[in-house]
Length: 148
Image (cartoon, rainbow, N blue to C red):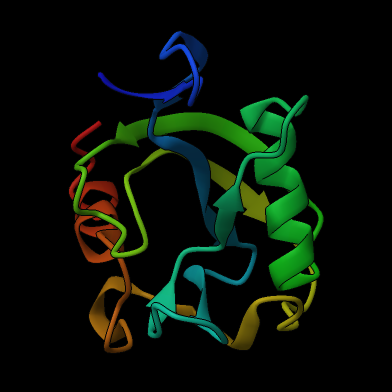
């Protein structure tokens, strides 16, 4: 674990220790009632199509985060059906080291792009859009092949 220390400029004593840890995130595979998976096109860097998701807030469970992020980005109220898998490759997000907990959820209604989503769509394995951001193509492949 990388630790950064702030030292007193006069005596050299360590006055603050800061640990550098990965940031927790969630991603949600939303199975839409009409069939297919809901993906968003990202408004912000890194660009591309992605699973709805985002950063966990302090004091929030990963489950609460998943429901909140799904609603913020897709306008859908989702029901989490199960935790899928955790992905932690340090290079999965070009902005920094993140660890994502992926959930599978069901969603009813008409998805509408909101918050960080520029566009939204419902896709099957046969018609996935391109490019797909982060490691989400691998996550989707694992999902479609029922690896976990």
